Length: 360
Ligand SMILES: Nc1ncnc2c1ncn2[C@@H]1O[C@H](COP(=O)(O)OP(=O)(O)OP(=O)(O)O)[C@@H](O)[C@H]1O
Ligand SMILES: [Mg+2]
Image 1: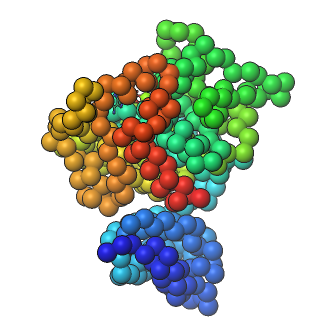
Image 2: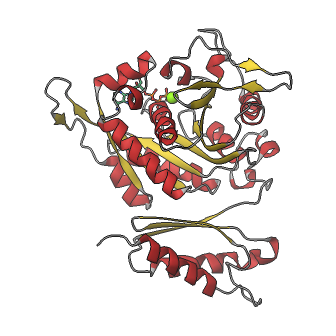
């Protein structure tokens, strides 16, 4: 059965208009509690925001929305998320987060419509590769796109874009002009460090630096700012994701069974700060032989898909492991530019289109 998105969205809208706020003559929609409805192939996320006076009915209303949406024909999965008000302290949802977090909790970046974070449960799974190519594919759809490398300990965006020798220009307003390449505005600590200089900053310094990257860089008007997060889902990453208002998170994983655990951590990190999960990408799913083009499954693949099903988040697709992809990254010409017809470029292109659809 094909998914009739228009009908489902209409039914969800009608449903939300029917859900009354107890003790008031108003409903969820009229009261401005509905922030966003995202529907994709049966998977629906509804983002709600509750003003102070309705908070005591929150759980009851969330349940009503969840039950109602789940009962709509064609809906296979329902995710109810809650958006915190700008400036509201998210650290309360995240015990153990470093102290620097509340100072910049949940802020919008002026001029930037949607910030999409790319995360992974562990290092080396291809997060930066996905972030770089996703930014390029989003720009290809005609959007204005920025790419912020927030991995201050292991920045790889300058290398992947062939921009290692670049230095961003400072303006006399104490702001910095991002470095442009392949239609993207980019910023990375890699532009500011001498090669091989060790990064010895501790948590609060990192937060301070990222705040500057977000608020003192001349991003201009952007439809999307893609954030390449540092590997892992610990306090440092949590501090980052709770410090700005994120539109959504993409989780990159590998196909082995253990991916389930990594994905779970990623999902937990985003849900602690109530950021919707746009989906899971499985990288290095199979090996594509450069000689005969035959595809071989190296691992018992499917971990990413299994994790998506298990946790009820969208599965965005899989990317094969191909030697030329690593070469492209090393040479500073991303796969989406060097091999625009490759499976990686195609998969990431379709992810970009899905994201555009979900976050227009
Ligand atoms: N599908 C793929 N096929 C071949 N090589 C790949 C693929 N995806 C990524 N790589 C290569 O694997 C290496 C690690 O990828 P990448 O730097 O994107 O991972 P990461 O998750 O950002 O790592 P880190 O945790 O260090 O930030 C890079 O050399 C990259 O070019
Ligand atoms: Mg990386």
